[in-house]
Length: 150
Image (tube, rainbow, N blue to C red; front, side, top):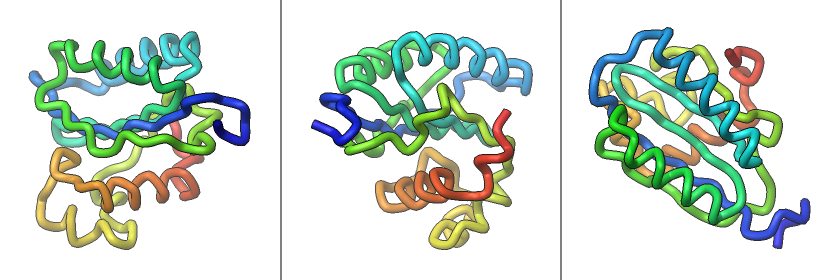
């Protein structure tokens, strides 16, 4: 049990590829729906999108997050959904974010120590391993981009 009395609290970090090009309006529509759904389910997290790939963190009760992931896996806008990390957590990293979406670029992300070599080689979120996913998570949990949320 976690310190904040949330039993079975987990986070899931995943990446997926878009199945068709998405416009900024498409992304904002996805965010609006995700924020409403996540608030009703007590799920928090963050979404990054760049060059056809999504990187998302979902935090919440284990059964709720698993059910939400199954729904996302069936969403025809996602392809090759890859669960990078699914693990219990003591507390949420994005407790105040129903679904944060920092408007930053891969170039800005590549400035995060430990990720610069990865993104300079032209790789996408789909290629992140667990270690780099955690570096990205930590950078957003405590970093400057918290103020750039849309």
